[in-house]
Length: 188
Ligand SMILES: *[C@@H]1O[C@H](CO)[C@@H](O)[C@H](O)[C@H]1NC(C)=O
Ligand SMILES: *[C@@H]1O[C@H](CO)[C@@H](O)[C@H](O)[C@H]1NC(C)=O
Ligand SMILES: *[C@@H]1O[C@H](CO)[C@@H](O)[C@H](O)[C@H]1NC(C)=O
Ligand SMILES: *[C@@H]1O[C@H](CO)[C@@H](O)[C@H](O)[C@H]1NC(C)=O
Ligand SMILES: *[C@@H]1O[C@H](CO)[C@@H](O)[C@H](O)[C@H]1NC(C)=O
Image (tube, rainbow, N blue to C red; front, side, top):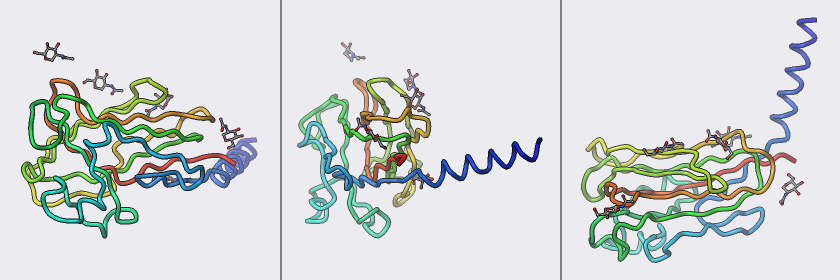
């Protein structure tokens, strides 16, 4: 009896694994559906392609070798007026729709406290419901960390979902976000 249970659990878990497929949206569009990631306000965000054009274009210059496809999108939330962008005290958002049962957000994190200021303060909403946070002061070391799963959800009901990522909060601390890839799983 116990063996039978184990065997059927094993088959079930193998079956579940076999039909789950990951799709990497990377940081611009869904290769399966063509849906675009929406960065808002658009001019508060920099894409890695622009950042590589020269110093002064962007705050964060992570190493392309360590990023998926060498691309990223970054923004800095600042509660006060600054040179980062023209949207002081405005949380900066990423919106993406996907049809799936799991979602993962992978970021690079700057370890420095200046050039760039690497503090993180993100929140995550699924279908308009707050489901997670990622806040971390930068440890004040040189360089970056890569492939950090800042939010994962493996228990979504099947179907269409909207993920909203928010960088910063009104009256909060300055924060940097470097989006490398958004991955979701769907069941065939
Ligand atoms: C999908 O990608 C995530 C994040 O990289 C990983 O943790 C997960 O195991 C992957 N799932 C499948 C079915 O490949
Ligand atoms: C995953 O999403 C569901 C549906 O929005 C939510 O109820 C659940 O709390 C989320 N889990 C995590 C780990 O964020
Ligand atoms: C996220 O952080 C806010 C503010 O600290 C808190 O009110 C909220 O409960 C947190 N939510 C989750 C899902 O961790
Ligand atoms: C932000 O700070 C201003 C000025 O102190 C205050 O009027 C406002 O209510 C605060 N907003 C939030 C969301 O905390
Ligand atoms: C989501 O994908 C499933 C197959 O994985 C499909 O049956 C379903 O119709 C899709 N739903 C939407 C709203 O696109």
